[in-house]
Image (cartoon, rainbow, N blue to C red; front, top):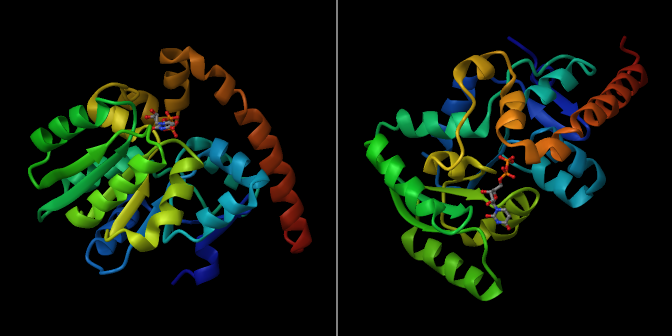
Length: 253
Ligand code: UDP
């Protein structure tokens, strides 16, 4: 059996676990059977770069119950470390698979995206997945007063699962700040997944996803993302530097 330490890889200070998609899925299912509030985050290269400079964000990521590598950039970065993370497990994919394979009724709350998006996402999800009920939702543009109402609503609805898509690091910090007051079994920081569930943003065709080029499709279909994506080479240089340095420090080659 693989030794425990062999299953982990710390990339730019964030600890990832090497899991297959199915292993990650069954971990999430298990979380839904517990009484605790479990948290899952799905960092991509941009998030790691931000966490590298923001110790609070990094700490929040590392305290999650499950961290999944969302993006081919993380797999490429792992190459400079101990090459433990070889499979991408995207947040959007795993949420949809969790919905698709739910064997018993699952009550979900959506928090995030622009006004109107969650209502569409609810309609689509309930039509497509027979065991999923979206018991409540709110858009991701709220002030302090509204936030208190949202928390009270989640407390009274007691959903099994909470999806928070208000952009990083806001969504991770929001979940960490409110974790103890929310009666939920599983919270996931989902970025733009609510837009995808609503049909407002299209996923890349399978061919792009299967070769790890979803980023290329997003760049073509949303050229405004150019500035964000241009940071990927910088991320890889940082990972190369940090990864090789950490291996030399441990006396590895
Ligand atoms: N968003 C939000 N509130 C905010 C900022 C962003 O609800 O204050 C939403 C935004 O509308 C979008 C999501 O957060 O639905 C972030 O999407 P993005 O594509 O940036 O995330 P990614 O999937 O790339 O991490």
